[in-house]
Amino acid sequence: MDRFEKRAMALALSLVMMFFGLVVYAAKGLQADLPTCLPNARLFERGRVVEIGPNRYQVDVVAYMWGFDMGTVNQIKLPRGAVVDFYITSRDVMHGYHIDKTLVNLMAIPGAVTYSRVKFDRAGEYQIICHEYCGLGHQNMAGQVIVE
Image 1: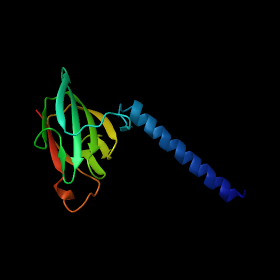
Image 2: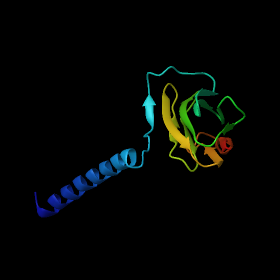
Image 3: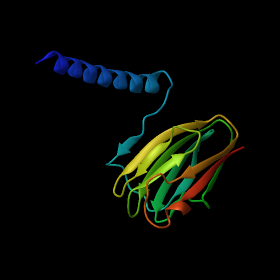
């Protein structure tokens, strides 16, 4: 190897180590839950919002062309400080599920369930959008989390 190849290899290795360190820092230092795919989870056909404990909720979301079935009319109302487990799947094609002002950024994949947890500490409106182009009605895929 000549010196340019050695430098390129050292740079590539240091970048990989830096990215790995940033992921560990985000997960541990910032207490960010990394999105998880649960391929063996029980698939669900309908969306729902269920209170599973004091200020703890589970939201099952089914994405479809061109909307989100969350068991509500695309709006979820929660109290401030609520901890929410989001489980999402898709009926048809891949969709995105992003909740503005949070770290929730999931892919809705047919045949699989993806998962993320978030705590809503601040009151306000959090927009939900599909960030994966899924067809002509893509712009209509929206929802809202309202924290009171």
